[in-house]
Length: 442
Image: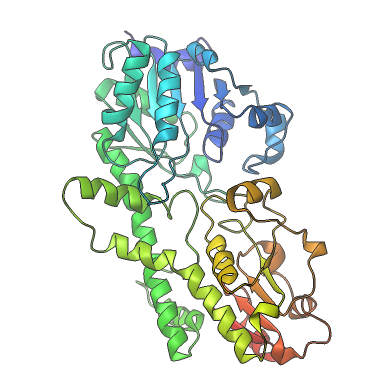
């Protein structure tokens, strides 16, 4: 098999590249590659595929460019037979017990195996713990295809580093980790990714190392944010402002610049569990990573409890109060609601028999109802509030004036009884103090 001719075949137009999974990760990859080579974009979600065909990008990662792309979108798996370079970018969530949920990766492996052409290279981008690609994906593909890995086809791993909603650190500007099962596959994978990755690629020696890079880099970030969240809880007890403390700390050259917050999403709130799960199987119990996860998973409850306390101190009966939550997505200026920790705030409030009203024009109402049982209310239809929790830093919330914020509250409510929780520290402390409102910041 001439695996070393796939790159030249793609460049000449004789070969095609395929993307399996067209979500927040796969979609930008497919569109970027389509600027240079022939691309088949496959997803099992027919509705998503039809949206893309009609020029609609619900992920908001591509925007208007979706209308001009030459990606051949399909929900027919047999179309994968036309490709000799296949990239798999499907989700890797966790189960209710926080153990890795590999069903999407296993399903994608079956689909690839059933439609694999001899002489192809398969590259997984989905975040997994070290060993999954070789120990789980290869056997499934071999079984379904009847083809021997290393002889009839080859495999590699290149962890995705796409940051949903980020218009600065985009696919082409983030250095790409690449690996292959041997030198030939690694070299060919590198050449293919170099077509689109302007920042360049970084080749590691084997697939397990590449898998580890991804879960370690996100675990590091998770731990750093956990430290900031713990500092926020300490500062709350000390009755000093966390943001001011961090602003002072960040004047030193070796400060890392992390801030406290809700840690959700498809990577940072999930990947540490993939790493610790792999460690557990080898007899090592995490001392730091899991403790960091516990802290970050507790912040939603901490915020909700702060809201209850502030309402009581403002002389309100929380059960009778109208509580508005601004934002549901896991991060600002992005429609992605996967693993959003805002739901922890909502669920904690419900434990106190408070039924909060949630608004987020970025989020998909159907997805919110299906994933979380949340009925989103359009921003212009929310009632006047006793308590407002600004949970997500969307620009429309970030740039609100104090006057606009006050207009969210009941008109006959004295300023000192208006309870505002600024979870993301979006607003200036001097303006908050001058407003006369009762406020709290994480």
